[in-house]
Image (tube, rainbow, N blue to C red; front, side, top):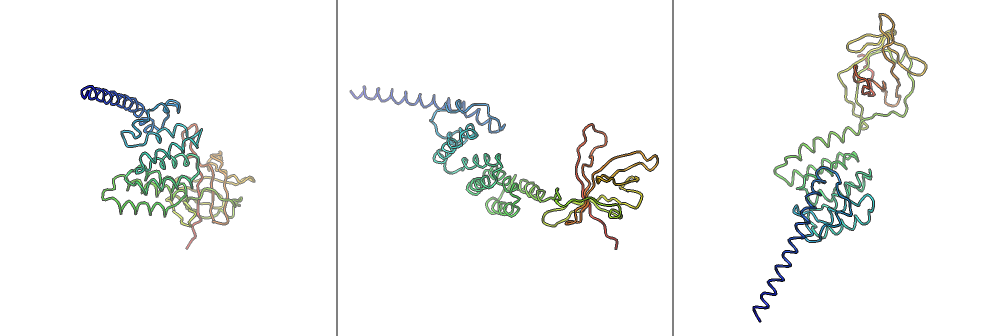
Length: 296
């Protein structure tokens, strides 16, 4: 009798073990594809396909919850179901805050920056050892132009880790990008400028919302007849529609036409659509900004 019971339970144990190993094997195959999708930021599976992942095991080989791994495949079409999957993922592994990371990414793509920042902050401060959490949180801070938040986050990194490989470079890049978002590109009070106002020397600048001005090593000058840059001299005139026309001094041939305006509030000269390349079918263009150099 004992032998029969032993054989029965042995058979049962082996059968259950084989079944669990089979489910684990199937799960590993899906996880391999999903992990490649995460790395490539691509979705090669449909949600119906990832729904076939077995529920055993409920945590993947990289400790990511299986239910949370499914969520990105449905979050765009069924936010509620995705949120339920992410909540389930939090229960399966509440320590790595992967669900918050997914939600932040989702809201960042929708440009819902407050929500993206909320979830990224939770992911970073609760699991800072994941560099991706720090990078994502920085992205939300850049979008919000929150330079103080960037400084606070890096202070937290400094107080948490002795080795900060990757974090320091990410901080420098993020802080620079956040500062660039303070650059002024649009001037609401642009107006036409007359020839008399143009007379004098002008230096190219970058202007920030904070009031900071960065002067560049490029100057232009206007006198009553000629326009000068660092390499050339042109005859010029301003048309009625506020277009600066530059002409060769030798044959009066038209060189270029540049929209030109002035901002009274910031005392800034604006040259629009300046070509950055001379020999290109479709040259890149940019606006350039100048401040008058006051003679001492």
